[in-house]
Amino acid sequence: MKIPIDITSGEIKTSDQNLSKTIIGIDLGTTNSLVSYIENGQAKAIPDASGKRTLVPSVIYFNEQNEAIIGDAAVEMQTIHPERTIYSIKRMMGRSYNDVMADGNDHGYKVIAPESEEALVRIQVGEEILTPIDLSALILKELKKRAQDFLKQEVNACVITVPAYFNDAQRQATRDAGKLAGLDVLRIVNEPTAASLGYGVGLSRTEEKTIAVYDLGGGTFDISILKVEDGIFEVLSTHGDTHLGGDDFDQLIVDHWKEKYALNESSFSANDYNQTLRMAAIKAKKLLSTESNALSNQ
Figure 1: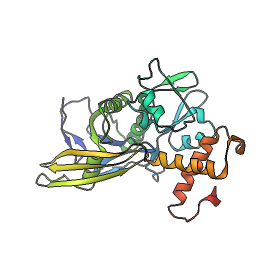
Figure 2: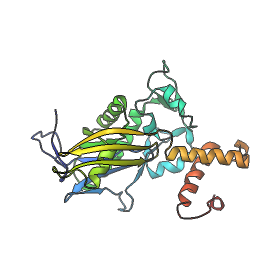
Figure 3: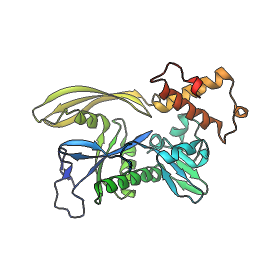
Figure 4: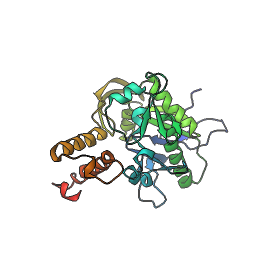
């Protein structure tokens, strides 16, 4: 069943009493995720309880009681308990074990082969086996809770954005994660389409344009060509490098450091020197946005 959505108000136009009136928009990202709502025709990102930070790191830490901790509190655990801290799970959505292993990144957590290497990938945390859908659902639950706390109402309907290159399996995996999180996923929207709407392109029915949208994220760098006509978005073409995102920049910095400074496990006292280096690379990458040298800060 198709449910009409008023994108200027963020409300569902339906008589279905099982759906809340307000829907939320979710960017389920590789590095960070975000949840928003519409207020007076404008999209508003929902902040945390302090009202200062809107981004939720897409990182999940499982403590010794197997309780999931999501977001900023989980980030610091990547070097303390790398085997129990999951990151960049979006890159594994709807993909087989062989596909994921071909990426070559060294995860601190355990990626296991299912019965068939062509089957979807699995993650092991302690004795528990989890799928990328299970893990993405935990992030979506956190975003849902943040929205409900902020809006002070129940929220059970959402729109989730995905990369334009996502295939059917990856889109279905995203829907399944939403359902597992207790959300009715009304739309799966291509990220370049969402970006266009965010800049006001396509809101007018009389507008006809062909536009290019670049997307540099944690997982990929890609470009999509969109045709906008009569309020309808058509993706004419999308292309890019699925190994040229922030994660890959981090790994290249790590590889460079290992080679230049002859770094190995004996150089570190942390549980996992790869994760220690990766977190240092992320910090250096961010510092280089404002400083000319970041090595002295590591």
